[in-house]
Length: 379
Image (cartoon, rainbow, N blue to C red):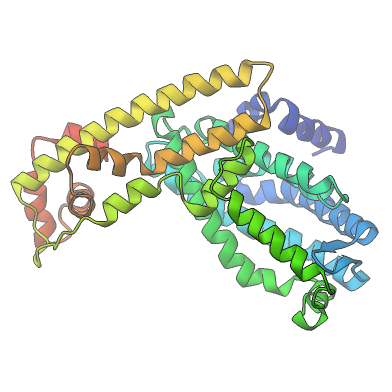
């Protein structure tokens, strides 16, 4: 791909992504070829630019100050960025494609990799600019959030996931991304951590506070505890705090945790269990569609308005995240036992998708006869 064409696409990915998505979604290029022609050249530029800016501005470590990396650490940082991004994109691409297939979309690794790359362009730009002192972290955070918004909008375009199931795909994918990032960070990531940073993060270089500073610190901590119960007027702070504490779905989860159910040893369902499950699952699907449509109308209007702000983005993430426990909430509000419902749902899935797996699934599958159309809609 010519340099000027690539630069134009990068501009599109940030400023006007939808036309680019339509073009890239129609491209039948294999993911391996996409890696060679597009992904690796761009991520190499990002890695080198980030390393050079880190050399210029240094790492800003709390309580320590600025640490400037050596040439060896710069190379390690650049190589680590290329390796970690390339591997994680392929793993997450597979997950995104698999989830799409499960939710009625296209299980297409090529499309998934392309989607994740193009929606991540803003966050890659934020990674480069994030090294700038004082304002870098704000830019990086904002661009990262923008990439999340683009991901939500791009899922139906690239993977054909129905709009009603887009929220599920988005939430499940974010959870998977979090897990993958932790695993890769603890394994491959440790190999590319700059040695200068590790050296300055040793506990023995962190000095105790000077006289008088301890009292100030204690006072600040007490003030923080006093204000902890007060709600913030900043939606960003509210979102971060609620996500970190789990307050956005704590009440629903606590109620569901109290439910108890002892599954039968033979794993067989009863007709009454199947009927209760179908009734609740049908209600869940109805509520999910209603909520998805309300959110779509709400944020379609927001995106088109001139006052769409970063606060709206965070509030949107809170709304979408709350959908992760919507099924649990509907079950509890309609008198269901979440523990039994979850177990029955797993058995119904087994019987519906693999009826001949075992004598038990064959038995359970017979209980589902006549409800195939409903099961296709709710599973």
